[in-house]
Amino acid sequence: MNVHELKNLFARTKEYTPDHVNELLDFTKKSYIQNEITFLEYRNLVRELELLGAFIPEDQKEIPL
Image (cartoon, rainbow, N blue to C red; front, side):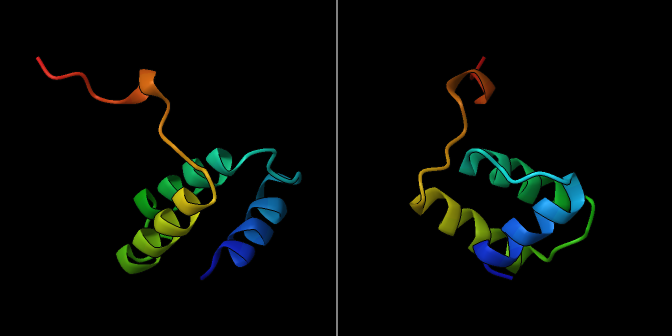
């Protein structure tokens, strides 16, 4: 699966198109957790999405104790 296919799957599932690549990143994570995509697909999609500007917001990153 590539980002284009992911975007189409997102649009079919959510019934709207994503406004930002971060929405696709969240959707990718959810899909992986629910075993809808393989680890290899997940890793490749995350890499592509990060190249397109996706990022984890600072407030969602783990803070070391």
